[in-house]
Length: 253
Image (cartoon, rainbow, N blue to C red):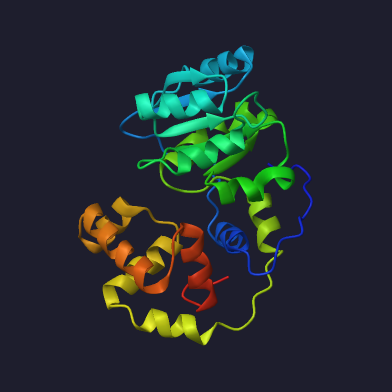
């Protein structure tokens, strides 16, 4: 997990910079990620049948991962997700017709979007940032699939973002933050104590059920608090939560 990579030029104040900082502080990539009690339903989307067969074979002996469908382009990806409801889509980028990036945006807009794990020949520095912005949950080079694919599937299925630790540091090193805006601090202070706690936990990477378990409330109630936070503070995506929390020093760089 130590292949060479280059630091991209990121726009100042990018939410993706904030995401990289959080990933570096609390790495999501880890060997030996625990197995799930229930199988993770996976769809494979790649225009090469031999690649799909190779991925299916790689996952065949994994007890908590089951491949429920295959597609050859982004149009197939959307149709399969709507019909089969998988948790994770393993997505190639370069495909005829609807490509992987376009399909990722379409999947992210669904009422119940799957986690998209991009598996491609391209290096992270070439494509990572726009894909995270489009809604992807992880990025893995095909030459690392045999070693890391199972861990990556488990990570994104759990609600975390998967990138290699070196790439997380690459994003974090590009961050240049100024002082916390007074307006954001005032907006945070206007929230109730429970809303503040939910905001912080989302920014730290916890999903709805995990937050509910910590607070002793249901995941549905967590969603209600998140909706209130988003309406009051003007947040939309988890990267917005991360950026907001970093700006007011709610979580540490």
